[in-house]
Image (cartoon, rainbow, N blue to C red; front, top):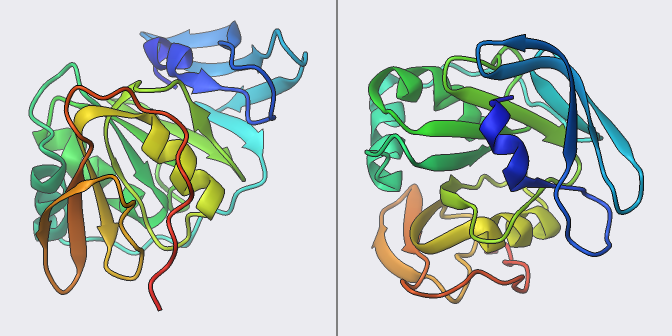
Length: 207
């Protein structure tokens, strides 16, 4: 887990929003390899092991190798061109992270990525049934069909104004996004510029 990204994570329990405090046991450059995140509000503690923040629960799907075309397409759809950007990749999208990390300067924060994807070199991993972020703390996000309604709402609230969100056509795009593009596989939406992200109603799955 990239040290600077700790400030963007929030306790998954429902209570007043507050930052998490890191107790670091082993650091590799600026990546936390072993340690604990503590919540000052509810006093819960969450282990960081092998660079993965473990919030509890969550399923990591089996790995299916993406094509280079798929990874480049996702990077372009999210407009990952700036080293100051952080993008959330949920579920199976995380398989694209090693390729994207090789061509984009942006940092990637993976939520429940496929088994076999590891943390480090511009990639951070969080595992959990629900992962929450600070409001407007992320530049972009990609959601897949395994995301729960609660996770979709939490991720949407994390993307700042002007940021892009990508999802499969089987997932309804949150209604406040401006649709930029759509094909037979994905849609690309944009959070209205100049707005401050707030919790929104969960997106519904298309039938």
